[in-house]
Length: 251
Image (cartoon, rainbow, N blue to C red; front, side):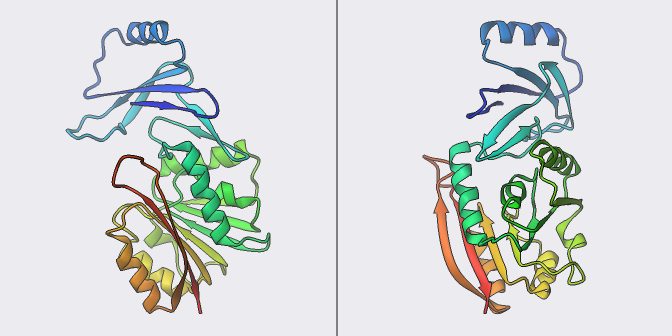
């Protein structure tokens, strides 16, 4: 897998292999960099299972520092081999600008960022918010999120590691805005039930799966949320996949 920093010039080659034996790994990396000098880091990800997943159980840096960086807006983000990061950087900025617009931040709001990944959305919003709280189940992603916050000198953001359905409840602080960017299956039923009881006035729902999204939106509508705006972004040109951003508010 090859990842490049569109705005930084970094280029990562991530070789996903099965098993631990990889003879001549350093020689391989050296030849690769010699032939393609634009490569800034070479990483080997070890995936012992039989799958098409490009995230390994562990990784080994063969050349460089094992990460690249990308710049979106005024923020710089570190991308490690197993980080989820939008591959279409230019559209990612449009996506984050849409989320920021729908959030309607004035500097006084507390924002809850669910399924926050490496913290990109929360960090992007933090400059316009009073506080941001991100929740993510993948601990390595939370570690990256904290590093990204430090890298960008963002001090009003906190990240919690754990499943959304286990961490959120109505006893949390009062949030003004919730940004929800769930996996393809949608919001976990238990998490959705808790979220509805929290009665957060404004919700920005981001979905990469238009088949799963209607169920969640219907449940939100039944709980008193009303649709205010919808925007569709083509993150993957020449495919059927789109990213949908929905703004809903409690009447």
